[in-house]
Amino acid sequence: MHQPTSDLRIRATTALPVPATVVEEIPLDDAGSDRIARARREISSIMAGRDDRLLVVVGPCSIHDPGAALEYAALLHAAADRHAGELLVAMRVYFEKPRTVVGWKGLINDPDLDETFHISKGLRKARRLMADITAHGLPIATEFLDTTLGQYYADLVSWGAIGARTVESQVHRELASGLSMPVGFKNRTDGNVQVAVEAIRSARHPHWFPSLARDGTPACMQTTGNEDTHLVLRGGSRGPNYSAESVGSAVRLLSKSGLPPHLMVDCSHANSGKDAERQTDVASDLAARIAAGDRGIAAVMVESNLVGGSQDYRAVPLVRGQSITDACLSWDKTIPIMDRLADAVGARRGNQA
Image 1 (spheres, one colour):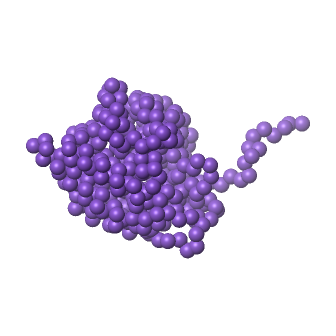
Image 2: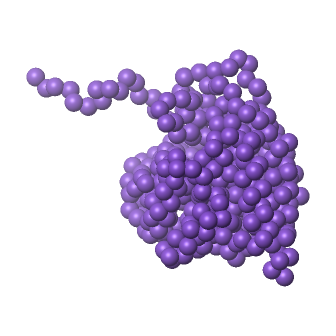
Image 3: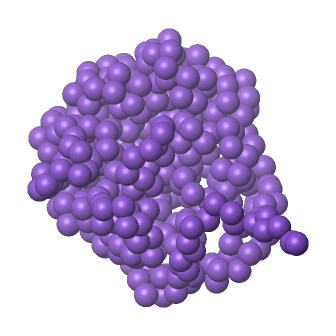
């Protein structure tokens, strides 16, 4: 008797729309494509040291309420316009959340927050929100976790991240080598920076890898390599790594590896000891060093939301504009950080004049 050997632990299979269908339903218009192309070029110039502005990636740890996210985007756009001469501001629009064990995995995976896992609905909600934020005039930053889902929305992304848990993954390095936007690689969760530098070097080379084409068919992708890849320091289990010594060490490692000596510092995660309020102290420290002339710090990341702190995603009712994953700074406490960073860029220019 033939013994079954496949799908023994698959309970059900649900078809997803092909990426091309979702893209056609929620298209990117000419004005939006112009904004994204310009933002990608400008981010590339900042991370290569050709543009002396600071890239600031700021926004919620994760998106669960598109309405609240659009309210945040309107506030952020006004602040971005105010500091456009010193800062290029991109909004964190994260839909996929890696979990250490289990937990809510993001808007795409469970858009209704009730473990019904309507992923087709989640993909459409994600793309619609990205299109709406683009229409607000803001560049979008997101993490690429699942290596196939980018086909649904990567055309709307101006800056991408490969996270600390996937920085060693060969398939994520291959993916990054073919992405159309600048990509930051975070150091490993234990704080190891060498692994991220190796990932950057790998992603700058061409690769062949299997994936899904936009029409949904399995395909082999050949990439050109992504020269717009860089390092993100986010601290680790060994402690924070945003100090002058840590940044200097990382910059020297980049230079030794033949890479541009410019990086991003994440003010949250292990650099703040997972205390959202401490992001203010981290950003202030970075701002002081930028003002003194530090050019290695080319970008900063901050986790921020309308309301500070966090809440359980099963709470009823949910507090509008408050994170259901990692705690965030409130918007009111985010404004002074952006002001301080903009002032720091101005001071750095004055010191170099």
